[in-house]
Length: 439
Ligand code: PLP
Image (cartoon, rainbow, N blue to C red; front, side, top):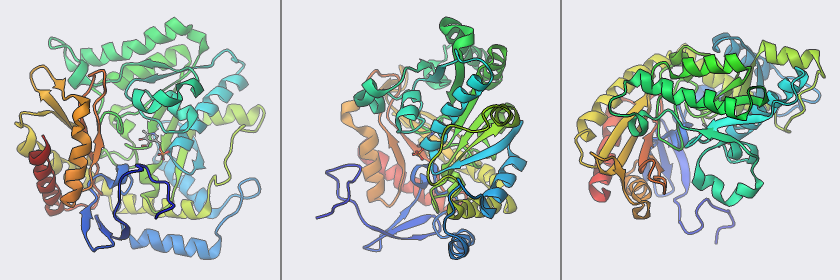
C-alpha cells in the first residue's frame, strides 16, 4: 500500500520512470505525449541535457546558501537575464519556489509599497472571476474559481472579483471585439470607484487565462484600458504569467503582445520547465526603491528564496529559450497546431470554441453550439476526456465547466516548445479518438 497522499484518493496512477523529449514513460514502458506540459510546465520537454548538466554542476559546486546571508551567482545571472528581456520598467527579481509563492509575494509587496508610500488605507485587491492564482490562502482568495474556493471561504480575505475578458461567452452579438473589451475593462473602474478610489492597492489578472478557462486570450485594447485605469487611480497592476509566461504564447512574456507592462509580474512554470521548482516576482525600480528608501526590508520570505540549484536550472532554461529562438518556434508550431485543431474540430457539433495563442490552446465543449449551453457538469465530460486521452497516450489538461453554467467543460493543450509537427499530429489523433469516445 502506498503512503503517498495523492491528489485523488481513489485513483491508481502509473509510475513515471523516465522522460524522453516530449514523452513521459511509465514503469510498463508505455509512452505518453506530454500535450499539456503537465500544467504548462515542461516547455523544453523531459530530457534537456543543457538543463540537467547545469543542475549537476551547480549541485556539485554549491547546493544551498540561505539568502539571509548570501546571494549566489546563478540567481544574480538569472535576474540580470530576466530583467534584460522583461517588459517596461521591471527592474528587480524576487525568486521563490513556485507560482503561488510568486503571487503571495506580489500581493504582500503591493500592500507594503502603499504603506511605505504613505497610503496605508490602500488595502483592497481586485481580481477576476474564473481566474486561478494558486492554492495558498492569499493566492486562493485572489482566484475567482468558485469550486476551488468553496471549502475554504471562511479562511479567505475579501477580494473583489470582476468579469474576465472572455469574449466567446460574454460578448454581445452586436458588439465589436474592441467595444466588448472596453466594456469588460470598465468593470475595473466601476469597482475601484465603488470601493473608494484611494482604498484599492492592486488589480491582478492572467493576461491569457489558463487553469480555469483554458487558454483564453484578451481582446485587443482590453489591457491597454486596464493599464490606463490603474494609472488613473494609483492602483498597481499585477500580471500573473505563472502559466502563460516564458514563451508559452509566442512572446517571452504574454503581456508583450498587449503593449502593456505591469508594475509586478509573476512567473513560474516555464521558468524552471519542471527541472526544478522555481518562480519569480518581478517589480519596477519605483516599487523596489520605495521599500529600499523606506524600511529597507520587504516583510516576507521563504527558506528556499533564490535557491542556487533552482536558479541554475532557470538560467539554463532561459538561455535555451533565447539562444535557440524557441519563442519564434512556438509561434510557428502554434500556427500549425491552431490550423490542425480547427481543421479537425471546428465543425464538431459539441466544440463550442477553440482559442489560444502560441502553444497554449483550449477547446470548450458545449451541449448546444447555438445557445453555447454547457453540458451538465454531472456528466464529467472534461474528466472523462482526460482519462480517455491518457489511455491513448496523450496528457491533456481537463477543466470541468462551472455549475453556474458560465462556461463549459474544456481541455487545454500546452505541448513542449520542441514538439514536431508529426508529434502534434499524433497527439491530435489521440485527442480525436478520446472525443469520439466521450462527447
Ligand atoms: N497562477 C497561475 C496563473 C497558475 O496557473 C498557477 C498554477 O496553475 C498558479 C498561479 C499557482 O502556481 P503553483 O501551482 O506553482 O503554486
